[in-house]
Length: 379
Image (cartoon, rainbow, N blue to C red; front, side, top):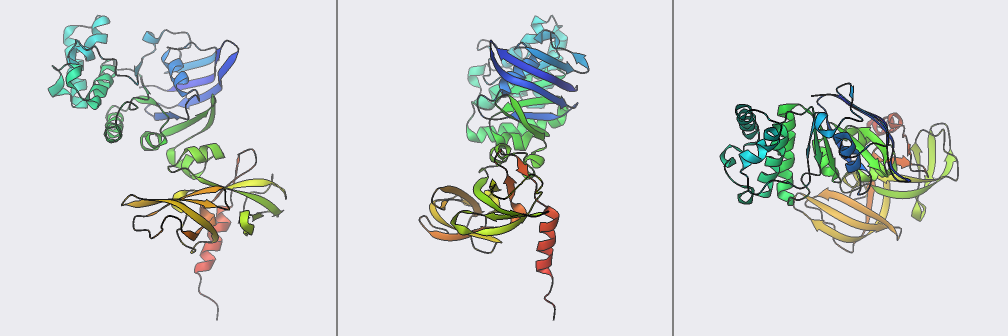
């Protein structure tokens, strides 16, 4: 178990810089997930931590020791790859112990560590089988067991579930979460799947084009995204965005106009906003109401309705060219090709400026306004 610290880490391939001065602190025992779209640099960053990719500039410290130029085998890390990379002619026991055998560890110690890892991963009955006799999930557990026996300071996972089917991915997510709960080692996990990130992580690092967009707990990123990229990437289905224009600005209020003429006041941090600015309002699908009972009402044309039993996804168009997604109850009466009024409440909204940066809403003012509505009428 160990802390891990990245200081101004840069990676260049010739003249092309792909990782741009990343600073990151990972605490002992944390489960940290690197998430982002393909090509964002998450696997490159993981490989630099592992020592499999050379760092162009900056430093990496593991357990307060600078390992920037230390060989991979000496860093105290172990990596689980996307492919299982098991030796087909070896049994599960031999695969799990092979690295220790190459390191000249005694047979007695290899047996002890393999048995211990097999018990953690429930592989005991499979130790004498060969990989061809295992399912995909079992093979991945063997690959994880091969790292456990090394007793590393830091576990590194590079999209380990991407080769599994959907049902098995869910089961393996649970297994990995239980593994972290039992071992409490520092773990870094790379994925492009934000659902994996939200369900596994203590801390999420959102990457885009070799830069860190935001770091925080899953709920921090969900509730308070720093920009429209994080807002759209975290959450499934992704956040809805509606363009709007600022009509007027006061010390704590914005007057906004939406497509189709809807106007409303939004309590917000207005210091860097002026009349005429174009903003984006964000609202998550699960916060959109399938009727006109909310504060802000818009009319949409329904395109597709997906009834999934426990919930219903509705895909619609607003103002002709703005896509809207609703996640509503499983017994929704919305039908495809409906023209329908839907709504949402300001308390759940997010605002972003033209650069995509979040504009903070005055939640206190929104909460006060909501409380006032609940007071009995005077007289």
